[in-house]
Length: 450
Ligand code: PMP
Image (cartoon, rainbow, N blue to C red; front, side, top):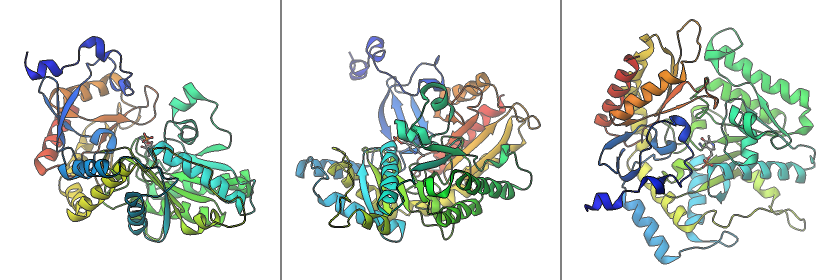
């Protein structure tokens, strides 16, 4: 037997794995990845695929960075595990680096995933208000189409249909507001005007609910899993003003948008003057090499948890949160992003290459192409007038064709069949020009074959 044959998992074994993303195309044979290199991976049969969605938009630096693997190995040999109920150097250094990157002074609580980073943020927001004389401020507002995680609190902030259809009721006190989705807005006017009206709905909601009851507003700067929605930067600035006005903490979910994906180190940096109270991150923080979540809070908030003589500490712990190896990986990841000017690179190639996909706007089934950096969504419709979401079967055809030719792309939007009509393109930030050309040509020809 060849080595490859020996390494192949048999069908019976594969049937014992609960594959979370089976929904992309349940009939299609699942790819079993065995090796990664740059933006590409190889399956058991030796076939190569370009990963057009960076795993789950996390593989910012692509596969096979030995430096990162070495950083993890060295850390594991040196101090294999240590809890953050005490301190270790990689976590201290990483928290300092995150504060520097965010601008301003932030303290960071580490966990293991994006969901957990957001859960942590909600608990911090509630306790903060509790300890600053506003114990009734407990509600958390998020947007329809927003995605914030899969655990019950984060899922309650996730206002997509999977929550509503299968897991309601959510956690009490989680409310949802209309998103800045200008393509399908109920408001008239330019995209910017309709986005600003969506921001106004947040203020309305806070007033109706009573500002004395609202703890936090959580948003992705650019809704990602909900179909890549890129609002006017004025929308982000306006919601930040509203949050400030009503003492509502602004939680910026940078799980997807952080670490260069959008052409800035963080998505919120596109909106001049916005400085979130809390920033959550995961995915690109380690480029996916090891699991790590982070919740960075402004020092004014953190200080409330340090008041002496009071029971002010945060009653929250995560056994593996801030694992030394994961922190060492994150530090190396950030070092490479800075050393190789990855953020600048994304800005340039997003314009000079990836933006070619906007040419698809002349196709009858393409309703809108939305892009910010290496985050791009193509909203597929039956026709431009009706804007009816393209039938699932036709979309599966496009994704299947790409896969056949060796390109993995995703689809998203809302999570129910029939509304999952946005093609997602989010390649590793280190993709070569040839990689991007292959991606663009393959996807374009698949869509044009419709
Ligand atoms: N926030 C956003 C914006 C996300 O896209 C995701 C994951 N897709 C999460 C949070 C949750 O992250 P995780 O899957 O690591 O829990």
